[in-house]
Image (cartoon, rainbow, N blue to C red; front, top):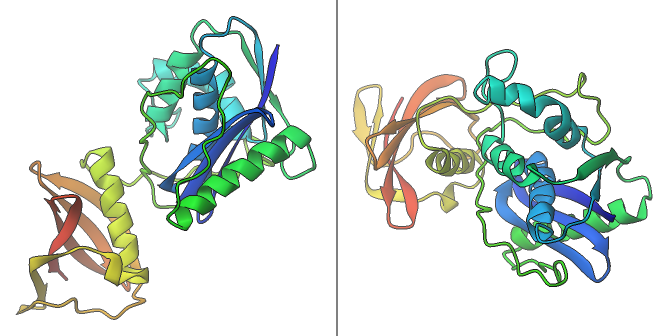
Length: 282
């Protein structure tokens, strides 16, 4: 039997995020994203482990410190699928793209899950946690993470791993919470595609914390109480809350926000390699 530990890490949740699975010092892998959540990392660690061992005809036990992962994959998923990937309250399942990939990889596999208490000295869990956190730190610092040696006789999985954050509320680390006690963050409403929505979520968050990092369109128009200008009308540090992100054709997204509790609208246009803020009304 293969025994592996899987773990995730997010430095801001959402923020620079990492994932890792660990079997031994010679058999492990890690990766991550510039922006992700702890729950995304936990799920991706299991997904990459399944992909990396798909050629091995042997039972596997996965050690996880996340009740969210274990309950999602062993209890909740059948009901979600019957309801069209919606929860009992009718709301869409979070991290659904990851969930669907995991569902496909688990089909026909002899895989069991065991909960272990996180940050409690379990050697394999600590090893996975250390590698996931190192990957998140590498993304935070703009470095390529150490992806590890992988599984013997297996090439690195080439299937997709570019999963996007679809919510702005913090996803808590659920390794010590029961399923009943675990709060679930809400996805950002709106019709925008997941990747476009994730890009706009990042840009809106940066408008209040790091405006210089936001791409501003050359023809930015700001409308404030009937007056037009070419500069944002609020100071750095303004409280910006995101309410929804809707598609406007194929090349733009409209973000409905609040700026210091006042409603506003931000129009982002796709430009080469980025989404640029083009129009503000408040």
